[in-house]
Image: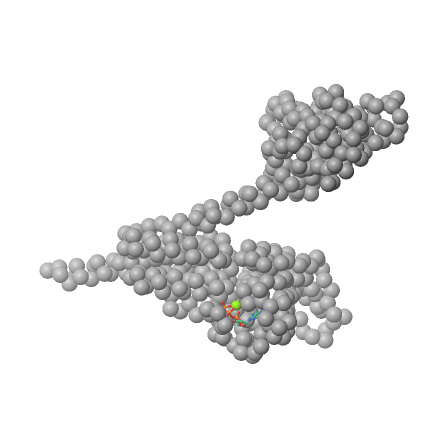
Length: 301
Length: 146
Ligand SMILES: Nc1ncnc2c1ncn2[C@@H]1O[C@H](COP(=O)(O)OP(=O)(O)OP(=O)(O)O)[C@@H](O)[C@H]1O
Ligand SMILES: [Mg+2]
């Protein structure tokens, strides 16, 4: 049991550190408010910033005090940390928004140790040297654990953001729009690996059916790479649209991509292509117009 | 033979998301070396094909991406490695339109056309290694090394 070992190792000093943190709560919190970790976190005004930073500092000191009192200085799962996890997550998130890597944030947490250590040593002056050293060690271990907790919290938060964005990206990037009666279009943005290509196809084909579209335009201006899988996907979508009675037009093939497709050897010849989305719309409108005008023309007296 | 200017990177190829990273990394590395837009696009497209083969046919693996230079010309070299089933008939796999799955079968042959140098080493049962190199200003003439 690592926790129990830690408790045994740091027993009395850990409790001393806990008492010290309680006693010096205010001073520690104020020293920490100036530390890098809390720099960009709060508010616009200097005083609002200070208040909020000191407030967070107090909460962290309280948490550390209770972890130390439990004798669990080396245990990142100690109950005491639970109370400040959210605050730590917000603080770390603010730092990463300010451009810091997880590693840099971790170093900022580490920088909280020195001011606390100074206060501790000053506070214990007159006590036996060995005891002071043991207390300093217990504090160092405790601060290391805090560092671990922040890193864990932050990594988990980043992971959650990625997970949350995945389906959102999928849907947000496939808005099928009706450009004209009988003309639907989908601008593709980003990559078309795996699940996304399926979502795009389905959304476009649904729109073809629902709007009884005669033309389905896929604009690939925002697609950075057209490899054989993407090309195959485009060909299949075109084929499916054709079965539903719509002509598929691919627009936005940039010159570099056109040259690459040709060299790759993929034949998009069976699909109508146009340089831009408006060219594609123009193509569709001319065809639709021709169908409307031609009969009208012959029937006019 | 060649000296590298810049750091090489080793990236895993284990998921669709990894393919995105590999492409992004390669595009950035190529841009930094001075590849033009068309050259970048060709190289990244080849890389996309090879990385997907590593994932789909090779069962996953990794790619090493290294800046190189020869006779004063800078380039980017990528080595794709997997320990999958390997390719029994290389000539056939390299032919246009040959596919084991439902693909177009243009991956290997197309990738070979999109890069300046292409080497493939594969044994059934021990996996596949594909190495490609492209040069910023076209392939340097051999025997010009200082
Ligand atoms: N890393 C690999 N490991 C094992 N087999 C491979 C590997 N790479 C390619 N192959 C074999 O070579 C064949 C041709 O590959 P290629 O990339 O040209 O076509 P594909 O992947 O089947 O289809 P496409 O890439 O056009 O979607 C594959 O079907 C596969 O059998
Ligand atoms: Mg392939």
